Length: 157
Image (cartoon, rainbow, N blue to C red; front, top):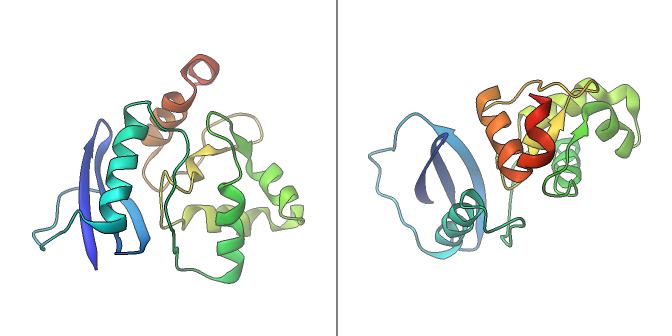
């Protein structure tokens, strides 16, 4: 397992994977003392995330292997269809997946996304436009939404 860290304005991002794929991207309180590597796909992910935080990248070109149930992977696939700078409600996401009654399950899968930012679970908001739930904290969700579309999103929060 390879691991890399990226210091950002909203905290430390930990990236894990192997030479060909990314398994997790998440916020951590501190860097692990374990040895880490910034080669292969993990190094590529770190570079692309740096470009994203610098406002130079809107789409990621990485092999992702998020571990989860078939339903969760379906939700995470749908999240990747939300364009940069746009948001969608949990209800709309449930509708897109074909079952509005599954809104709680969709929200739960969204919250268990193991590859933050790259699989953009931060782009899902409440039906009334409010920020709701984000495993990394609402302050990070607000930052990411504003980073992607500061002109259109700032006034919402």
